[in-house]
Image 1 (cartoon, rainbow, N blue to C red):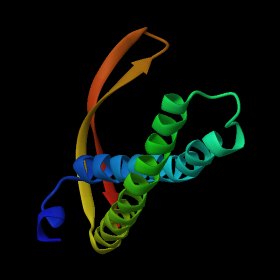
Image 2: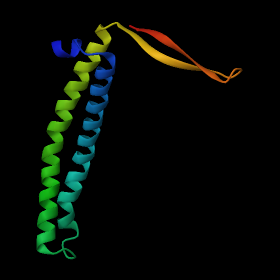
Image 3: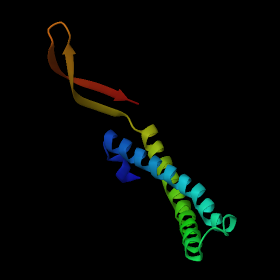
Length: 115
């Protein structure tokens, strides 16, 4: 928790996006795993023995991998959201504004406060 408080807003948002992506991937794996594991039993007549066993193994491993992915990244998202609610961010970022009358670019700074 202390390490998250020292990060910049860009790094925190990147961590939050990654955690959301991994959680979504875990949910997809949790849905696809049982489908793949039970498909050899549903379509058993048309599948060879090796293909059915491999599909059952892949589905089982996918399901077992998905559960920790969802749990870990849900906790990570909750921790990042509490950090975002506690912190006040002050950002100074460079910006370029295009002037359409003179067709030139003007450089400047953008000051943002998030609280």
